[in-house]
Image (cartoon, rainbow over all chains, first blue to last red; front, side):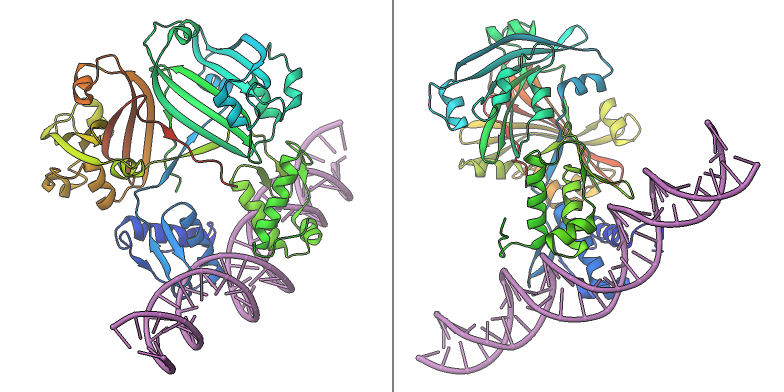
Amino acid sequence: MSRNTSQPLYKHVKKQMLDRIRSGKLGFGALVPCEADLAEEFGCARLTVHRALRELADEGFLERRRRAGTRVAQRASRGFQLSVSRVDEEVFARGEVYRYELITRVAATAPNPVASAFGIAPGAEMLHVVCRHWSNDRVFQTEDRWINTDAIPAAADQPFRHAGPNRWLLDNVPFSEVRHEIAAVAAGPEEARLLKLDAGHPLLQIRRETGWQGRSVTVAVLNHPGELFTLTSQPQAV
Amino acid sequence: MSRNTSQPLYKHVKKQMLDRIRSGKLGFGALVPCEADLAEEFGCARLTVHRALRELADEGFLERRRRAGTRVAQRASRGFQLSVSRVDEEVFARGEVYRYELITRVAATAPNPVASAFGIAPGAEMLHVVCRHWSNDRVFQTEDRWINTDAIPAAADQPFRHAGPNRWLLDNVPFSEVRHEIAAVAAGPEEARLLKLDAGHPLLQIRRETGWQGRSVTVAVLNHPGELFTLTSQPQAV
DNA sequence: CCTGCCATTAAGTATATACATTTAAAGGGT
DNA sequence: ACCCTTTAAATGTATATACTTAATGGCAGG
């Protein structure tokens, strides 16, 4: 129970409280003593306890409401963090050789679902880029992306010949919202050709919609051969 | 630029700084003024600025080092949050009817990969549960789970006849680490039968390993018909 | 018994102050 | 020029204090 002085006090309090939760001393739904009482118990200021409890609440361990106090959260709906990086960094992290290949890059009329996501008139022109990302000698990911040139005029000048739009966008365009959907689909003829697989092969498909201040700036469909690529979540940070 | 008084001051500062980052006024890698200067600029205490900047750093927008100051972070590898809930809650959230069905529940010798994950001798007995989760009249998820009865003796007494181990574990067992892998696979004959699909159908497969204080307590393989189920990430919180 | 008001409680925010920690940069000696 | 020491700048933590906000639970009045 003796505290490690090389560690900030609020972290010590945090760890102690987490221990009580994990050991079952404070079960799911249990009422946690109020900040003032804990401050007295730990012999520190209320703000120190406040910070510890606030961070535990941010991490999903506690639920806090004014006047009603602090309770141990039900664990049912805790999130977990999937890391999403630039595709070339993913490949590099696996110790393999990355190569980018542009398939097509055209200004075209956006199909209706894309146009409505961008909040523009159907029939308006925008940039459509299709490309492949290689890892050693295998196709690691195909990318089929629409870019709202209305929102990002600079994209219209990018050739995307030697580096993918993924990378350019991450490096150059501010974004505020990202929405992802992940599904397993069977490869259609077009996808099978691009991924050099047989039609019907299972694909891990990520649909990513990136927005800036409420407005969609780009939507992308990313396909991975199912068994080649697995997304791995990080363990819970504690 | 006038501040909304119904909003905490530190959030106002946070928003202002985020605007400067997103608008490009503070480009990637740019040096942010020190806390004292910002405090003077916003006419508030240093601690208020400190909290705003600390949270922005926690969210990955800034990088801070003592003495060296605060800089705008490169955006390359920001994570996103996938929510994981109890399967019955998932179905309920879709407005459909949930039904649980137990297939098998036996004490059996764990296969080697499972035993080694649990850190126990190969050949030791543990609980193996196979079940299905229905959404209306379709199989929403199959669950193939091993439970370390060494770590959770109470599980040996659970019949899992009317509610799945997923739910019981979440409600009753503390856990500290969760690791996920997500992949797309083709249904084998056994999976096809359980999911009432043809063999070869694409499945979204989630492998989940749950640990408590460094020790694995349960591993599960969850299969979803690929096109039925999509994991949707939450938009970035700002 | 029900309703609505209100006091009280607990969390949330803000400030001034102080001191600790890290480390870049300046300075000084060889 | 190089290395070592010192200084100071910036962030990090801790405390006391005060006020704000939300919401519960009790009380008064109908």
